[in-house]
Length: 125
Image 1: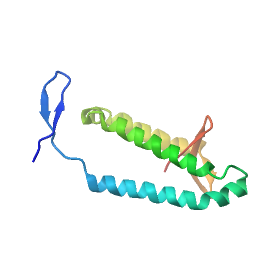
Image 2: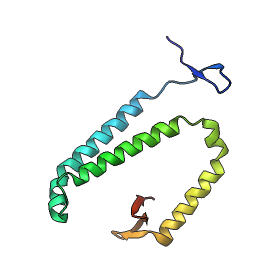
Image 3: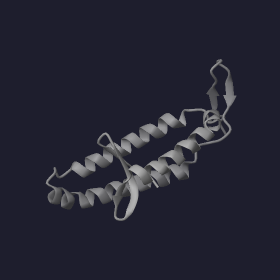
């Protein structure tokens, strides 16, 4: 079994303590593909109804997937110690965003789940 080593900031090698969870990665990839297929299937009907291009919703979904993968790769490179240090700040941010949804959120089907700012919307809750 090969050992995986990571380079520390002071140029020392350190033993990696764990391997990536490939099963979880495969499940996430499968869900992304299934979601893209569903959007592709319903896209022509929605596009005709809302008078937008035939691939409008598929393109939006692909962009969202690529942004999500980019964010995943960027955050996965951060050290775990950083998240441990920011625990209280992250919890506080979660509480503030939950309250913001109640105050500023758009009501969709009877639930306040969407925050819309500067032309972008984010689902929370």
